[in-house]
Image 1 (cartoon, rainbow, N blue to C red):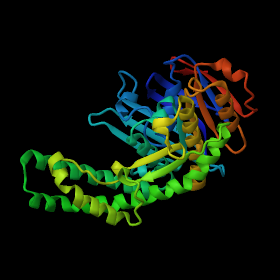
Image 2 (cartoon, helix red, strand yellow):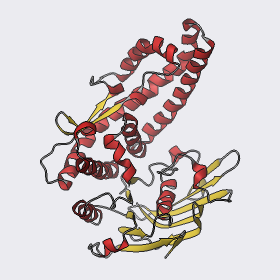
Image 3 (tube, rainbow, N blue to C red):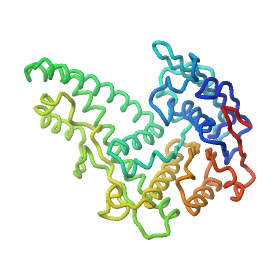
Image 4 (cartoon, rainbow, N blue to C red):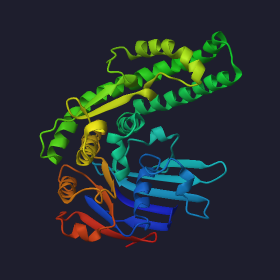
Amino acid sequence: MRADSIHLKNVRNHSDTLVRELAPKINILTGPNGAGKTSILEALSLTTLTKSFTTSTDSVLIRTDEQTLEVETRFFSDLEVPHRVLVTIDIGPPLKKTLFANSERVRSSADLIGRAPVVIITPDEKIITGGSPGERRRFLNMVLSQASRAYLEDEIEYRRALKQRNAVLGDARKERRSSGNLQAMLEPWTVLLIKHGSRIMRRRAAFCEEFLPCLTDSYALLSERRERPSIEYQPMGSKLQAADFATFLEEQSNYAFSEEIRRGTTLFGPHRDELLLCINPGQEARLYASQGQHKTLLVAMKLAEFEYLRTASGETPILLLDDVFSELDERRAVQLLERASSRSFGQTFITSTEGERFKAIHLGSDHRIFTVENGLVA
């Protein structure tokens, strides 16, 4: 998949910006901080993932003093089939997001996510390797939601049931309801949590096995050291690998019930999973990795994500690198650029304040450098 043009209206500091004749390989967006470079990548994110990768609040994307934004991206698939996506957001109230694919209204984000797969690398994503379990769960969901429509639908239904179950538990805690009545009220939501949660856990466990060879190969390309990265799925943070996740969740539900009443929240399910990342056997990255190892592991995970999504979706993902090169030393930066410009990779977008840096690196003929300043592109 590649983007041929991106049209932004009222997106942050872009009033009406059309970026066209995009290069099929490397597109570099240079300019000072605050010029609007990242906003162009956000526009791509809106038309692929239906959301920005920098914020979960859609309203902040709308240009100051405006009521609506509009983003249209024209894509071509690997087989050169045209694909056009239009996203509009109206500030309301209530805030309204509307999605169109090839001029037809899209019912939900699940109908759009995965059609044009993307892999995003930003400096903020270093928390995947060194942050809380929630950051690694987000990584899992980002990859698997693009790779599998069934996974995305299970995730949506799971979150809906979890929200309802937590609401019942929260109200019960305030009103001090009896456990007997409460269990009956929770039952339909508990059933849904176990149904969708077990599917999510089964797919996450399979993903870790499928992903490890990609991760090992990518890490070896980036590091001269003889380290052996690993990725291990831990359901609800446990090292136990459940064969029957539905039975596992049912047991955990019964075990956690009394504590759930006391705390007023759901204490079992895949929203409590952990993804254990190691740089060598027994050396958890979160605890033992150096700053350089964290950077190498993150980039290796993202390159592995690229290969995984290409296989799973049947389309070459678009790679978005937002201000990554300010965080990488020259050796890692050159390695990443060489990989991105190779035949095995597709289209890449890079934002940077260091435009001169890229003139000294051979990028091949299929690249363009755009200058962005005050929401204008040249």
